[in-house]
Length: 254
Ligand SMILES: NC(=O)c1ccc[n+]([C@@H]2O[C@H](COP(=O)([O-])OP(=O)(O)OC[C@H]3O[C@@H](n4cnc5c(N)ncnc54)[C@H](OP(=O)(O)O)[C@@H]3O)[C@@H](O)[C@H]2O)c1
Image (tube, rainbow, N blue to C red; front, side, top):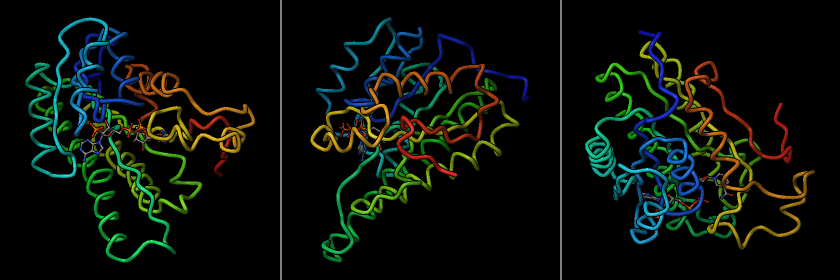
């Protein structure tokens, strides 16, 4: 069974959170590679339609749904696979990142935000991965799961602790799944980016933030998408279990 491997192109790919930002760049990168993409969105349907309309090739589909709800995750996986005629690659990109500094956040707000981060970032990733893996195993095709984690899992997120903690959990989940799913030809890896030039964080990208990297800049969404595309390729099977730092040497973990 371990001899099965994904093809180079023509794959059926679900990208969660592809309404804008990195998810949109991911959807475009896979489409440009000749893959067919299920463009998932949470609330920004119009932006997701713009992503869909910008993709190279044909056969792409749009799938909305709340990843913070287990039934929502099941429906997303089902409709994506139905629309694409199966599933070869899952990219767990959707996430929330809302501030909740421990010292100044009231307890009720703290609890609410922790629950939201865990529900979307960790459980949404876990549930979509389970559903995708079961489909890939039933197909007998092998597959790829790539998680979008974060540098914050290692460096710390003092004003966004639930974000950092859930991203660390996503990395750990990916490593456990890499071991569990390898006998079925499914490779699982994560990327851990530092800051990326996306709409969501544009207001945070000060000169000081850019200077965190000795290159004096933050990542483009396209260069992160390029790394994810490689991790989803047949040649990257041996990278299964990795957590790939993509932070321009802004943080070196030991
Ligand atoms: N930007 C950075 O500097 C940076 C750095 C490291 C890692 N990352 C990671 O990269 C990924 C993308 O970041 P981004 O900056 O592109 O963020 P973004 O623009 O906020 O995109 C997040 C995506 O997740 C979706 N989403 C959020 N909550 C959801 C829910 N409950 N159900 C379904 N979908 C939901 C959003 O859908 P709607 O908009 O349709 O609601 C959106 O498409 C995230 O995993 C983030 O943690 C980003």
